[in-house]
Length: 389
Image 1 (tube, rainbow, N blue to C red):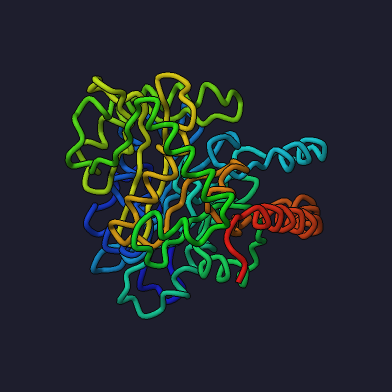
Image 2: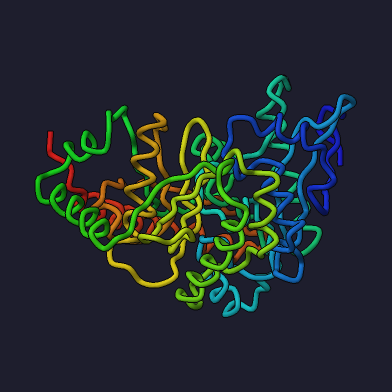
């Protein structure tokens, strides 16, 4: 497929192996670690992303004479699972209207509800907005010609979402969490921004865990023992099993073992140890770059009071403060997060349905759903225990 100025062509790659890693990562500079070639390729090589699990790669590639100028992770989906944008409502509606909802096209980093997806493009390309528009047009043409019900871009970067909205996609708003570090000197400096009741609660939780004989420390991925990667997979599966149908158990053992080979420098483990034991009784896997820390997976050998809060919240916060990391995304869900210093924010997914009836119903009713999401965000914000100005 040709770009309007005929200097580039758009094609669809069935795996990340169709891209040169250096070319891809040059385009992905400044995005989240989950947009890097190594992460996306490992998802495929490990068997976590494959047609049998309902994810068929159809990555967008735009090339000119010099090589790759544009790219985007893209998948044909046979179901709505593993996306963290729960569109069962629209799938049920489509069934009532006798409209085939699956397959659909999904632009996302799989299983990763982290804001920051966008189309990638070479920084020196002179018409990047036009290039992105052509990529969107190509995806919509791909959807129409192959009977996909629509195109869905998940957890998009804010300015890219504005661009997509200008080009006719419709925003569906969701609630997310973020912790911000304006430059705290230490964890106590952070606690000083909170009302006394919240400060007391957090100190008690940390103290009681320590008194139970459990110590938590954050260990760089480059320093983590090999066996932790397999243990992390065990804890990941156990945690997902507890969520039942709301779990997201796609990542294979090979994925976690593969992280040790290709992603160590971007990893950290929040690890919990009992007195006299060398093996962690609990682990949380963290991903980091210069601008943010991301909490991804966690689990423990058994229930230990207050372990989750320390392992997944307080210890990573403290580590981020020491490293001057300005933001920490702890993952989705949990009304206990606002009480521990996490603010609510709006994340967006962008949607375009091919069927005109489904598209009309979606655009008519999405403002009401967005209003409900904003009410929920305001409710959670009211729970934050920060001191009033």
